[in-house]
Image 1 (cartoon, one colour):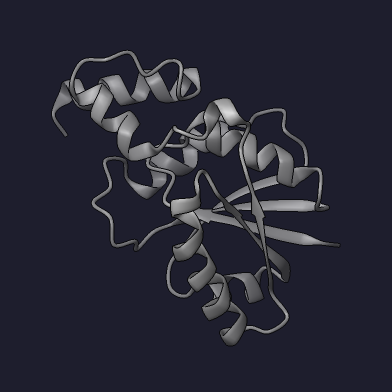
Image 2 (cartoon, rainbow, N blue to C red):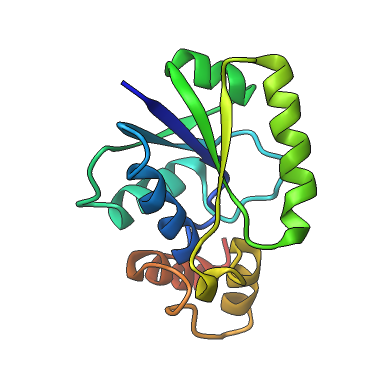
Length: 161
């Protein structure tokens, strides 16, 4: 079985993420969405909330598993018997950082490939950070995230958590 890992903080998952994961499910026998537990970012949603939001947003997409992880991504990939990491590229500015990560991961685990996928052109400008900022400022995020995420984001921002 060719299993791939699509890692990220997914705080929250966006329509761009969904596009990349749908493309990746066509390339691999199974795709594990790996939600980072201990990332350097200040997360709005807990890891449990992010996992649940992704599960709800991906109902009906075959060959997909959602898990959280902490520690080194290559260790998680080994444990999951993954052959590849899937990384999304929105713009040229993403490439340098992603390229460095791919080379570092290859050094740590030479048998783990990195596959870069781009979302559809009309989704390339979407980022979780920008979506959260639009929501904080009272804007409509429904064009950028799945309906369950828009609802949860609005509720989270209204509650002041």
